[in-house]
Length: 233
Image (cartoon, rainbow, N blue to C red):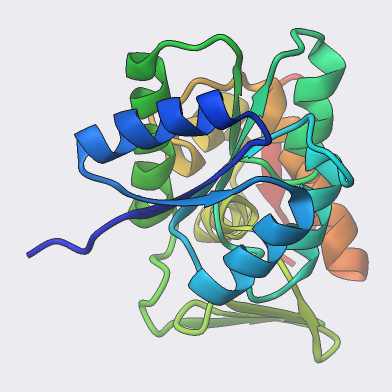
């Protein structure tokens, strides 16, 4: 029997929560609900859902701040998040992606689109990229150490908290060490062929990955007009 997928829906509008619950349960997902940021953070840390649908406009604490805190906590950093927003401006999408969201959906959305987006994110999270997560392999490059079994990255013996997508991008780059990987290739490997994001999303996540890796971020080269490469030396 396959594992039941638990999804945490976070929205302050009761009608939206009912709509999400109905369509998610109809598809076979288990549903948790939170009406504001603090409740969502507490529930995510305790229940550890498989995916979070997070509204941007929340009372008391904006969705972007909720996302920031989730990604800063080792217990919740790897939970994929899809942002829900009534705003159509690009800045809202960019901020969410820069903070570590896997995808975004603009309200109003169709139930079919919602389910497709969720399945696409869940698929790419479980499929992995490059050297497989959980393979038991350990990679060491000077200050950088990566343990695929424990999903652990350290730089100078200090733990670095990466999102699932950032971890996949790093493994993909290391698996092709010395070779240039195009944005499209990284997009397909880390997000999947059914993704709904653009190649620019790769740049956003790569910037975050470099910042988090600190001095080890210098091992990742940008090849202008082509993509990215993890240095051989």
